[in-house]
Image 1 (cartoon, one colour):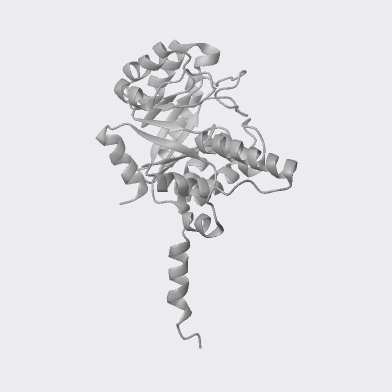
Image 2: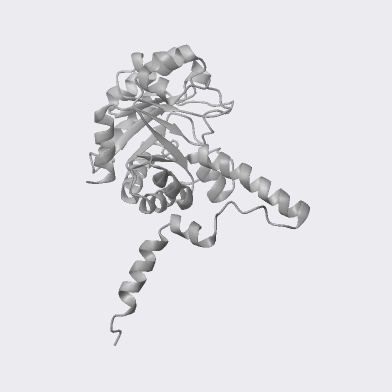
Length: 289
């Protein structure tokens, strides 16, 4: 069973699941080993970790698709990937779908922001006309060769145009062929509650600490009817805090921080040391003449 088929079944079963955000191979392995059923390739995390830039649409299609391939090949659970605006018009979206599909994404989301886009929880977002984005969804549907790959349509219309416009767009995008709808950055609990009721398609939720959306736990989101939840920043937030603390100690004292038990062997075991060691042993004794 492919990761895409697994994800489709998870959505069909109706039990709300969480896909924590991953930004590199190590964080992807950690999410899988923690027991989560899916992972989310965060666009903001990719921009920060891969090219050291903010989430302002600075990453390219080839950079993002290449990262999809690296992360998808590192884990067995489905990878849901950020595809920004599709990196241009409907023609660019067509190519984006091909590249993400080839790279191994189980799902991807496209958004209706202008290009270049910006993080969904920053001020100053603008969106393209809804009809233009509908054409992009049609291109995505036409480009997909594996019908199991999940197409997610994200609208960022809440901030610039209001909540009602965001809901209207969400339903237009569902009618155009999106499998799941992502209404980004609702601003009140009431809005969070209304989205699954008023959108005629499965919905997902973005759990962002310190963003424009009020905090709500995953259990409550499940009760409201959201199909799944992404937590894009959870791994990177934890890493940044821990790295800063460790570097501060090294700078101030000249000493390494107290070990957290992460020996080289333990670190390598997270990313498959036993598998590769067994593979090496299997081939080491073979006749190489």
